Image (cartoon, rainbow, N blue to C red):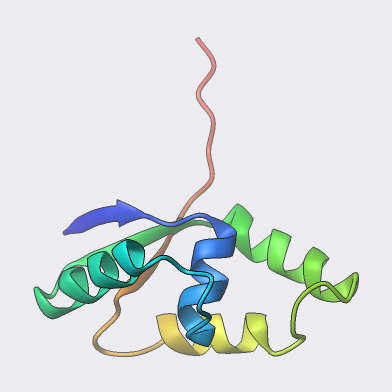
Length: 87
């Protein structure tokens, strides 16, 4: 079950164990993982990571690391489609 949604920076900080991710966010993700649930991130995050990497603002390993983390049997991070519905 999806229990939270992470933005791009929180996701990057999480996969690199960066201290800029708040203790509350770290604990929340850990609790979600331990319960077997998932944290969603938007597919637009993948495009943003490519952009930030190309601009030299984040590690070029970020996309590779994120894709490796979602390609496991115990997936904590789950990509969700970026869609818009206009009414």
